[in-house]
Image 1: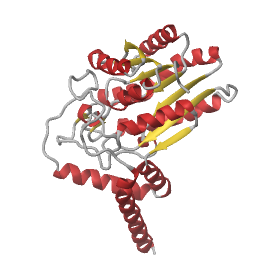
Image 2: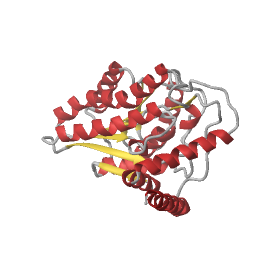
Image 3: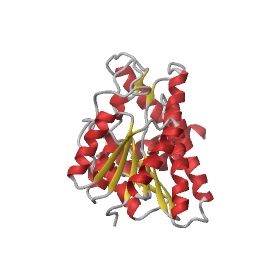
Image 4: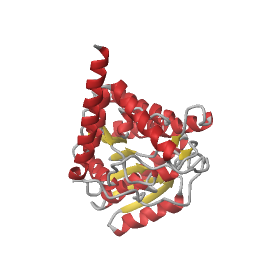
Amino acid sequence: MLNQKTIVITGASSGAGKAIALEFAQQANKLVLAARNMVALEETAEECRALGAEVKCVQTDVSEPTALINLASEADDFGNGIDVWVNNAGILAVGSFTDTPLEVTEQVIRTNLLGYIYGAHAVMPYFKKQGRGILINNISIGGFMPVPYGVGYSASKFGIRGFSSALKAELKDFPDIHVCDAYPAFLDSPGIQHAANYTGKVLKPAPPVYDPRRLAMAIVSLAENPRSELMVGSISNLIRLAYGILPGITLTITKAVISTYLNQAKDSGKTNGNIFNTLAFGNAVFGGWGLPGRPKAHRKYIAAGLLATTALSLLLVRKTR
């Protein structure tokens, strides 16, 4: 269904973005790949070409609005129009709010939130001129669940969800222009390796972690059959439900889990990660954090989460009586 479509993917040099590019490449599409790291981006491009795609690489810092305007222009010239635009580029800073430099928090928001807004603003005139187009925002479950020690990240993800909802309402008069949001759970990607870290501890993602290719397949499915939102992974549904019903308890559990981990984790130096500059490592699809997640493999985590939430809820009810 997507054969020979022109698809733009930001943050395509590693992790989820690279997985998304490779998934689209299997259908012989014209891909316009964007990232700051041109060396890693060209590596992704070569893998996509080997699968039959035509590929153009455009060095892009999504925190700069002019870079997105240039990206959209390059994509339009390359493909004679733009069919799908995937907002994916993102960065992460972990640490207490006061320990994290303000300029770092600002850059996280500029990249994760404003980068998506800049991308949408750059491509929307092309969509309106064509009378069609699909904008896909890879938001993550962080759009529904705040993350202690990741204040800038949470602000950006909640912001994307609000921005996207408003844009969808505004585009009601354009039935063939779709805005789709994907909410994956934690991925086995290099994101944590690239993260800025001000905790003084070695960072690891919370289990279970999902195969980034699972997200990539979900993104392609949105391009084939657009829908307003798509939860990717059973853990995403669980977290969304838990925070929606019991926000206080869910945040208390989350804070306790993160604090316990940080108290027990090995010491590590503080770093700005890839906030301001690209890194020469961790440019694969996978981060090497564990086995790719399958639905059945996560049932034990889901069951444990439900039991813990239920137990705490009952305890809270008894204390208030």
